Length: 567
Image 1 (cartoon, helix red, strand yellow):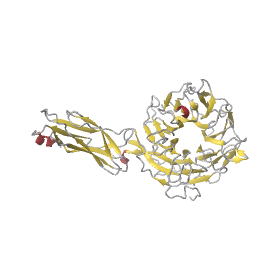
Image 2 (cartoon, helix red, strand yellow):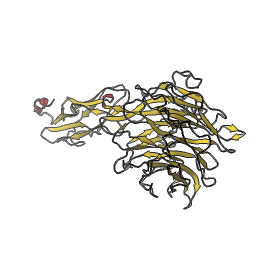
Image 3 (tube, rainbow, N blue to C red):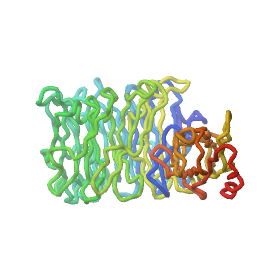
Image 4 (cartoon, one colour):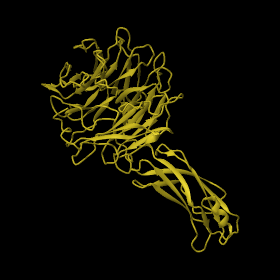
């Protein structure tokens, strides 16, 4: 498909992610997650990845597609058995002031019931005398997305900036058609448009107002079915609403669906004292404890916090069921929050949280975190942490589920790094992380190539273990091992760290046993090293042999001949 987008002009726009050293995840065998795709913008200040989301399956080929927003453009990449396409399959340049166009993008669901997912794009800076904003929906088809919007609306009043937030609302009235929710930057209002066989209604089917100057509607999302009544619910953020006690501000409000559509008043709202800018981002968390009710997640980046509330027949509780606060107060943890899908295939939804201003060794590089669901709910400790690699790169500025882009049955997710610089400043970058099968992971084994060490003066005779990997070798791999045997680590031989590092491009690493001459006559001592299962920061499969043995002899001992049988 030909397009005049800035990205399509650049053949090197996308590189399959040989960047797996950036971050990785392992939940145990037989599968894990690793970066499988990345793309960067090719224009200065494009801010590629400033908005991103799952697009659904717009061409009904059985693979999920993704949509990415930037300054002035929206891009869609189609999934396939080989994963995402290497150049955009669809792009559209937005109308109006280029600054901020394409800020919000996502799936609209199937608003006209034709079996194809549709996409929604918000342009809050669209001008008609003032920045009223504009929202457009493009229909999916067997040929993919059309270039002409099938539906569009502009903001109904001056400076509305409609489209500052857009999302599928789910099916709030259970009529079989997806609905959409739209929020504005100012005006403290949100609108929902119901789907039908003819598509979306041209005028709002539902309107809600927040408190003045609360920025109600600056974040909107489908909450899923939080109370289990069969109707989708809608979550709206008002991060600038001031409340008591002094110093806390922001609110999230939940509107329940029903046969007549959304209720006019919120069925639940929260404004925790620990939250600053609570409601900056909101979303469904999926069903993290598999109790049959959708759960919701809310970010509060000024207090570097994220909150999850579990669903129930009566809706969420007043107090959060899960709260995490970053160790860095100014990390903007919670600036982006989202459902990740069921990443590890255990039947429980997992969630993502971004911290775009987290500083590692690099200031403002950014981080993103994935938390596992379970029967007890979400874990407090992240199962995976990804880090940016560039000053002011804002990795984690946007996080979202990607669906299943390669059709392997595993959930994939995406992380935006909208401040990333290529040769063009502010070009932006996006990563997609896909499930790997054990066949795609390196297999690690160990053997003792020299199984005998001796306490010799002045230079000891060392024993050598070799840790080997087969399979992918394009990144550094840290292998964890445990130490056993009668010889004492750090007393009978130089202390071992418990990890061996195989460098990118290499297939092996050595572990040396260097005896310490204690001038004490001892019996032959054994050192056994066993490869541990992969950890949350490294992904590999433990092969056979998984353990090896060496011995340490006193100087001059005749046991060397006997020890050779251990090889």
